[in-house]
Image 1 (tube, rainbow, N blue to C red):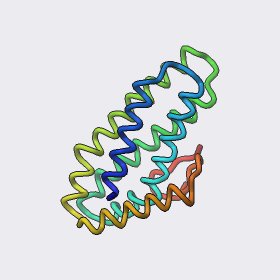
Image 2: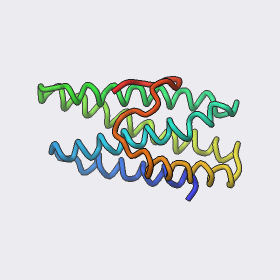
Image 3: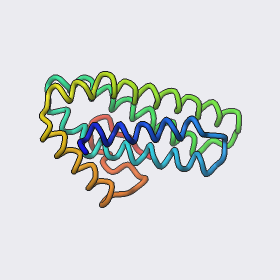
Length: 151
């Protein structure tokens, strides 16, 4: 699979997890893990390469800023003990992330496809798979990259 196919498959999983969320702690844990792993994959493998392409730089920077907000909300959720505030933060996370992945699919991914080759996308996809296998972590792997965040 190429990078876009892999990431869109993950996006579908994120939509499913959010849609099925019923408030259980374990369900939030699965959502949290899926989002953190996804952010790591995009920031470790895809986004640095896209910053090198002039036509994808602006959308990539915007997407990276979205990641900062997503990870900031996860950090707040991890620390929040008030149920009402937690639920409000979770709803904000859901809306932000679902909007983010929609923008990637409708704007960034078509731009990537237009600016790169099938071989490029396949190579990036292979690197994403390697990232999944060899660095399956729930921590932010590359805090020194542009737009990065700490969690």
